[in-house]
Image (cartoon, rainbow, N blue to C red; front, side):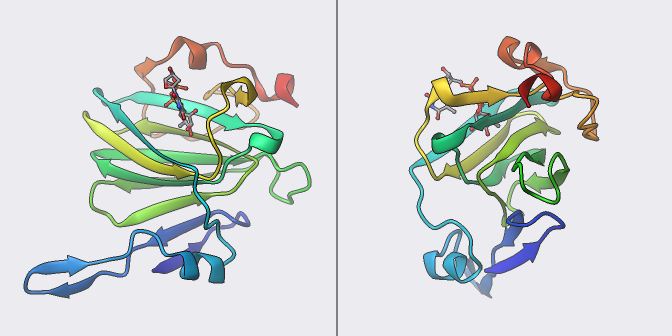
Length: 178
Ligand SMILES: Cc1cn([C@H]2C[C@H](O)[C@@H](COP(=O)(O)OP(=O)(O)O[C@H]3O[C@H](C)C(=O)[C@H](O)[C@H]3O)O2)c(=O)[nH]c1=O
């Protein structure tokens, strides 16, 4: 696999190394040894899948707090998304900085998001689907949400959300969380 660093420590865009032949290609979608070699997470508790009917669906910004914090490995298996991670690690030199990547069907890309990050995405095509591994089990009582349009974060979403859950509509501002 190919590991692309980002300006934020621990945040990586991992790419499949496709071995092609006349049948098509073979690629690893996860490899414990290679992830460990780059200091990335190797233990996963859940594989999650979210399907979105419409373009302009926004899910997030979410994270689980403290001992239930999750590492996520996010891929887009249908359509296209703009995927965003926000560094809320208190001691990080990039505290409160966000970083976004486009993920799309068959791009062979996986966004590795460490513990302590808010995560969210917006769909850029209808019927977009996201598959992601999480390192820790779902603990709804530990979930934290921040408003996608928070002015302090100033995330540059490529399009305006059209579909968003009431829970996400009513999320708090970052200043209320910290
Ligand atoms: C995450 C999760 C949810 N659920 C249930 C809870 C609700 O009944 C239903 C939808 O949950 P929610 O509206 O929180 O789903 P998303 O808005 O996609 O939330 C996710 O969106 C952002 C992008 C994330 O990174 C998180 O994984 C997660 O917060 O699935 C479960 O049963 N198990 C789970 O692991």
